[in-house]
Amino acid sequence: MVKRGSSPACKSARTGGRRHVPMRTCIACRQPRPKRSLIRIVSSPGRGVEIDPTGKMTGRGAYLCLDPDCWDTALSSSNVLPRALRTSVSTDDRAVLMAFRDQELTAGSVGAADG
Image (tube, rainbow, N blue to C red; front, side, top):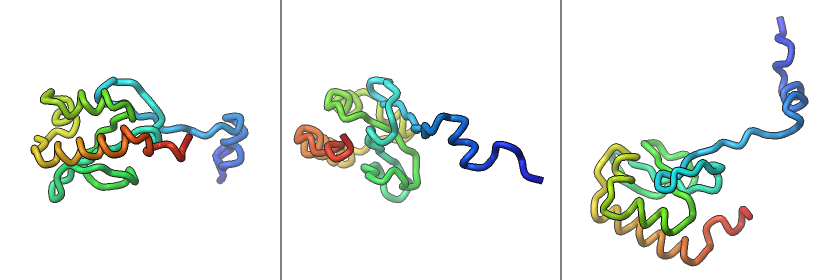
């Protein structure tokens, strides 16, 4: 027995052709944004804390928007990033994340192709 309205064609007809856009919240400014416009930071047991460019790495993730002020808030001595990742963030990991912020966000190269 086939359920009525369960085929993909029926689903797009019901929603008017609009696709679902996954939303995530920036851990610093708490603003919900489309997932593709945020940068995921992931903490995994064997690898520590790192940038997840694909959004598919295993481990606990947290999202930051492209605003350098949000990165400053998350990477400062506050407890924002460690609380979101539920782990401590080492000085080395923090330095790598700050280097990413300085190199990628201030240059404006991240997300420029998506616009």
